[in-house]
Image (cartoon, rainbow, N blue to C red; front, side, top):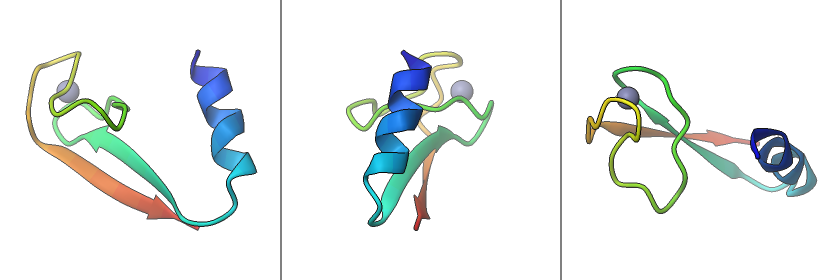
Length: 49
Ligand SMILES: [Zn+2]
């Protein structure tokens, strides 16, 4: 699951948005508004080019 996500990231060469929990660092999907691990709603977004 996670490996598939990574390979998709590298294929889309434009800007890719990584969403990550600010509290525990867990990667969350675009549809998640809070962290599945610690339930914090402080999700930060990073753009990778
Ligand atoms: Zn978290």
